[in-house]
Image (cartoon, rainbow, N blue to C red; front, side, top):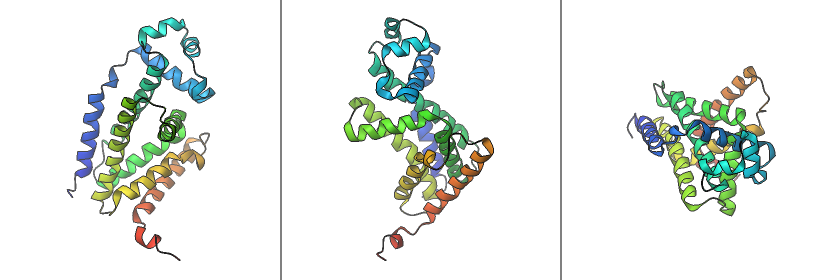
Length: 222
């Protein structure tokens, strides 16, 4: 495996993010999408209607359809895309100065963990994805895109782990991602910046501990 495979994975992610082309959202569309996410976080996903969205952005409900002709389903789909676009932009910025696979890995973990703790919409995203896996609530096309987003993101972790010399990288990465996605179960969103920094350092250490685990030894019966 090339020592720069993490760079190839990063570049593939950047190319795909550009192909998706979500950076061109108008200010009005962004305002609606962000209002939907805020309402879903505050009141629950199913409670958000076109009327409540319209009230939040101070326009009449029919005016929403000029921005989103397919109504609420389109807003849901586009809000997921917009959330992941913002995450992707932040991720590429975070890893931009990485000089090694380990630097790259640590930057990914730090960004992933801090956004998981600080941004409630990250947990909403995880909930929607998990619910779709169980009940298939998303349109097929959007589900395909979601699977692609998750795969491209995890490929960056896998490439860095392989470059650092860890075998069975995909299995280890799945454990690390699960740990990070559950961050708010062991890190309070209300923690101050100093505490968040300490917890982020802990998340990085834990991620390396998972990488170092002897998976075969752990699987042996006691």
